[in-house]
Length: 272
Length: 298
Picture (cartoon, chains in turn green, brown):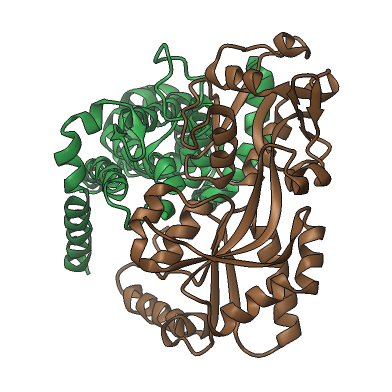
């Protein structure tokens, strides 16, 4: 089974590499750094790479306090029964398809962002980041909670026996022990956020541009998967355009693979 | 989360195998039923999907018809690559496409006439913007005009909505406004794909401008007239048919060579009396007579 998945991943990687090679020959490193994507003229994926990291970053910044707070609360302060309820709801939420979030985001979140921040339009990088944050929240909560739970009971008992209050015990004993697992959870959450296509596609605005100034997240943008989703069907078998999209795919594949591998490495350290 | 785990692995495999053996999957492989695949422009899609429904009901039988969106570019590509039987196209074939598919013997079947309009949010229309000149639209898309006040509307910033570059509607619109079907629109604030998406984004905004087929106009999305000198040409059916409205176009079915079998019957159905009624109900104008043109390549 494990060998099979390695072969699968390897095949996909080689295929992407082969299909995207022409665009790297044609554009050089400019493919990754320039942001002029004009089909038939030039292919610079800078704006999509920027957009992908930006939405993921925004999602994390917004959601981390809630995710970590929620994980600590569920793991340390809830009765076992409620803990189970919360856990199963979270795992259920983690499985909700992206299109559902996308439709809700398009019809509600985008409107709220528009009126809440007084923008001329609600389809922005920020909206996509916020939506992604909501989407990866359950993943990060359940995995971090697992990490917190796996801290052995003796540590807690010892800490309490030394006269620490419960909150001090959690803060100074449990959380430091669980840090690798929490980092792993964050990486896996990032992986999901990076690869999310349809939900982002519906609210990000679809504009291949790095905002000016770059930190103005209330502008429309584009992420790698949303670009692929919009143009793949048109580009099949059409030479350099297809190669360029495969180049985007390769970039995304490498980033998500790295994140998942890092995440799993940290999580494994917890289980040992 | 962890469905496939340890000993459950084999149960999992078994279930997956069973799923793949069910009707829909095995049909995909065996191809027992004849399938007519129609792909392309979302402008033509309402005609094709409504016609497909009626055609199936009329003909009975075991075949099936799939109608998928994607845009004109996807339609051309899929038909030429034999991934679809009929392509839905809402623009002329580009030079690049003619060159690339020179040997594919693409055949065009004109189905209906349609107008592309400059669409604005209803708030803007009610605020006084009933017609725009070509120059004004081009200035808005270039970013020289940024407030509706400058063209006689309310004091509100203009949300410029562009479309993906391969969309038929965009080709027609840009060809008229900029004289170049693939012109760039530096002022674009949003880029949308299908007609539905464009319609939804313009409707959601209270200051948007975009491009749409007339059939997609409604209470929230209004079409402006085109001002030429003292004259304002409204996007009415008469003006579109007569060719007075500058952004008129043909909606086309595309096949490889002369269509055969199911594809041929389907196209004949759409061009027949029942099909013409569907076309009118969808908001378009049927063609006066059957028109088929073999694409000649340079």
